[in-house]
Image (cartoon, rainbow, N blue to C red):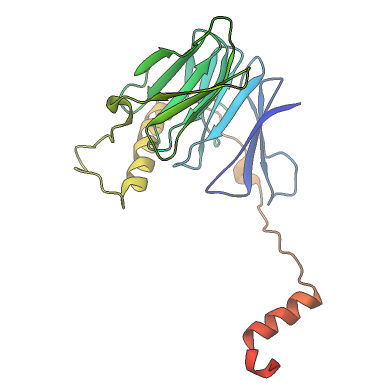
Length: 240
């Protein structure tokens, strides 16, 4: 059965589902078949799955098998794999950077990574359990403030302020200072370049058969009432 789901914010027809068996199922509402791709992602249940908010091809998964994996949906293999200290119950991309994510482990730690600055090690590992024997379940970035919130099994929420080092805007020497207008393009190029390098270094990557799929947009047939309303909008004077 499914354990988690996420919809692509840029390709609205795409969505992915994590399962108890550790598989990831990719679907499209524009394709005739039910499943586009099946990824053999983890050996234990997947607890969370998220598309990258800046780059439409990339998603991240976490599982009870202690691992976090970053994927390009064009390949059946993960591009990056992280082995953590305990089962990973939740993972979230940061809303301010395409390369920053937080992973929450059942031993009470938050692991914050920025693969742009350091692809191998986390920038920060912080214990967030306020009471002993309390199981934490979810983590989320605020889209407006430098705050991270964590939920637990008792229904409580704890908030933590991110340090300036974890929320500062990175700069590329070739681009200089980053403006708000070109920030989205910068973020897309940043993660694309990093993951392209990882793909080149991995000769065992297997492409999915998405190229063979024919995507067809679904058009809803208008009823007579809808057609009459369209004519009224085009010719308001005639109706009067």
